[in-house]
Image (cartoon, rainbow, N blue to C red):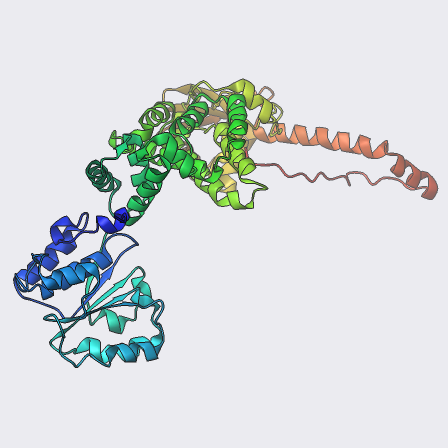
Length: 540
């Protein structure tokens, strides 16, 4: 006996057999039982969710000889059997993708006025109806609006956006949902148990996930795996036949990221490369794990048991903000993957970005303390990050603040640079010097001859900016300095530093061989105070 493929063998024959489409089934069952029939139906949804199956069941409900019009066709009368076998003469199944011309539509509608030959209704089932041409839709309009009493139209499509609104308004529209992976998994287990096929639960979970909401896709993938595994479905076999990455490899990559073991991770990526791993799929899975981790951080529930251990490790390591940024790094890298020299190098760059990420949490900044940071693999980061320092003042505040304390006293220049303040307030901030603090109160000193820059407006603006920056309400007090000679402000430090740079630039100019040649040849002299320094300073 010839074997029937699973997708055909397990096609639902009744509404009760249809899975994952309860709202649509309920609406059709109620309309059939109450004899409230529409002349045209439109079923929309992605591939493999039951559009054509639903249309055939509806056809049986309308043409069952034993039970009449209702939601429970008998399935044994000649009409039901003919529809199941595709031999019902009054059911016209049309593939709109291959019959797009208006002549085809006219030919189809020529026999609409004649009574059905075998059944109670003539059923016109037009699949992929969005492929019809504009003229074909126009030819269908009048008949679709007022067909003869013995005619029913059932339209099916995966792309309802391409159907004209004039057609949509004449149909009873039912949108079929994607089927959840849990429902697909349960259905596959039922099918395999009836087919007496041994299977592993992890294998079925992965097939359900790969099906992407389509029962037909799930059954097709299952049949492929059955053939490869000699009537057995194992996780190793589906990884081979579908070119998937074993679960332990993905968990191992996540574990390396959590522990920041860069060298081991790069070696492991090289190993996977020689196993012909799909690095795009691997990056997508890692992004999916970050997504599940973000959900777990909010709900404390893990929806993906395949990666439950990895999700918990990521949740323990990173806070909500860090998980979001790691997810964003993954998504951005996925977009850039097509432009990389190869997928392996693009994947490696994505991983390096994740490992290098060390956020500065300003909420943890305290007036008297430093930023609390988790321990990190400094030896690796020091090898891949070049520490650059840019001099903002005489103390040469370092650009990289990840390893330095950030306080009002020591890093006033950095904080002033980050404050969102106007020029007058910034002038005040540059001419005051930190003196002391008492809880949430800060005291600053200013020289007597500069007291004119202290105004109520600028003081309030500076206080508001500091409160916003430090995420804490504070107050500031500015008083005259008793000893102006000992007081050094940011303005003076910057002036001093600028003078040093000018002096160095002048010396460099005077000692330059080309400049010396020009002076000797033309008896030229340098103009005093004509040297300027142009430099671009990156933000801290």
